Length: 96
Ligand code: HEM
Image 1 (spheres, rainbow, N blue to C red):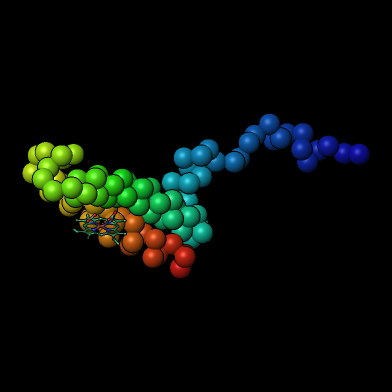
Image 2 (cartoon, rainbow, N blue to C red; image 1 turned 180 degrees about the horizontal axis):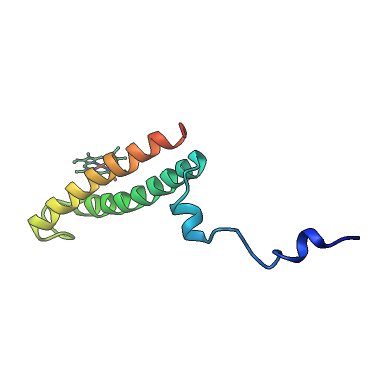
């Protein structure tokens, strides 16, 4: 049995590493998967901010977030993350 076909180059592994595999991919299914993962991560962060807001709004007055500026930051970050990073990314991924 001949081994000519494998004897010269079989020590080369042509599989791309993880970073190249996922972040340089032009495969539409890979890109869709990345959109999906991205949306999940944004949803978790935006969801964590909504938990802080719910804790604060559960009772009258200010107890968890005592700085008004920080409250505005949390609400704005939650809204932007949820709409632009979660919903937009999530509504695209299944079309790819
Ligand atoms: C699709 C996008 C969004 C999703 C999925 C979402 C999701 C949520 C969730 C799950 C909560 C917790 C509610 C609770 O525990 O009572 C929440 C709270 C809140 N979200 Fe959003 N949100 C989105 C967009 C926005 C936007 C655009 C704003 C405003 C800029 C916003 C402002 C708030 C506020 C003020 C609360 C606290 C309200 C409360 O708990 O009584 N959200 N959101």
